[in-house]
Amino acid sequence: MNGRFIEPAGDNVTVILNPATEEVAGHVHNASREQALLAVEQAAGAQRQWRLMPAAERGALMQRLADAIVEASAEIGAALAKESGKSLVDATNEAVYAAQITRYHAEWARRIEGEVIPSDTPDENLVLHREPIGVVACLIPFNFPIYTLMRKVAPALIAGNTVVVRPSNNTPLSAFELARAVERAALPAGVINILAMEHATAEVVCTHPKVGMITLTGSVNAGRKVLEYCKANIAKPSLELGGKTPAIVEPDADLQKAARELVASKLTHSGQLCTAIERVYVHESIHDEFVGMLRAQMQAKQIGDRYEDASRMGPLVNKASRDGIHAMVRRAVEAGAKLETGGEVPDRKGFFYPPTLLSNCRQDMEIVQEETFGPVLAVLKYSTIDEAIALANDHQFGLSSVLYTENYRTAMKVANSIEAGELYINRTPADPYQGFHAGWKRSGIGGDDGKHGMLEFTQTRLVVMKY
Image (cartoon, rainbow, N blue to C red):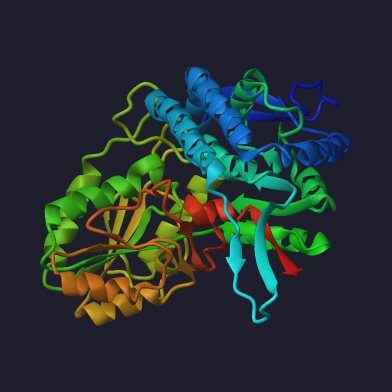
């Protein structure tokens, strides 16, 4: 808070478990209600000066912060690996990627532009300014907690806002290692504030009258809660919520490549990605062959502690997540799905669940309609590309989508018909910095990345000048 670490206000402590070993990875002191209120006030005070600083100077300070994050990447990565179950290499790389997206947004310093708009009156000019919103509350998920933190903080800062960050209660240790980098970068006090918080305290922050925007990456239910918070002061929401990425595989696709990439996407971080492939629509003429390819790819992946062996698939975030996913798989099998591989909780320490493939699925099944957020893949047949598009679109979510085909007519048809914020053709999702990661339907409001993600953190002022 306010540029420095502060003493805890009491003994309200969250214990963090290593999900691969169930051993204690560390603990954090939760902020008190009074500290949370003070953090918002300090951020609001800092924002009055931060917004007046030329954007180029803000950009230079953010480049300095990116340097500090890279220098601290080993410490950030070590904490993240222990609390998340990621490999040390992946966790350290996440810190480096966080620095890279910070640099990307810092480069918008001289590119945040307004508009001159023609007026209907001859002796009048209309000038539209882009202005910061004020204090932004940033609510961070557990799956990519360092990258997502800077994915939100960096555009907020370059636009002239200040932030109060709540890291996930599952992965706060790495956020406080990143906070050490913020301290070393010597940004103005109060610009970035990072507090571990219980839900009730987070609500105090989000409903504070000086918070003008709340940005969240999380579940649909969490998004509904944030919309309730926004109602208190009509704060602006920016929500990246659930996903249920469909992949359509056409007969003319490179099937080996498609199977390899779809499984790799599904098993990355044990399927705990908003854009991980969740349902695969396979043309009936290649269905059995392609299911065999998927099964072979999934059976080849071993589970285990990635801190010891990075080639293995790691654990889920906690026991509740694993138990919920297993219950969904059991219900799918009871409803008629065929278990091709996986589907059993291993008898070992850690919150592991094996790569699991289900065929003979139907569109109305829970396993097809609800997000698993785990290493479970559901496969369905289709007869025509129109049917595949209709099935892919028959859903509450619309975050990302995937198509494998070598036919440009098919590619254009799907590109113009898919009801999702993203379509990846002959590859799996990767969220480029300069794109716009935004969901349709219940997958969110607003979005992250690129010019449009940065402009999320601005508001407009129209100046009408009569002369």
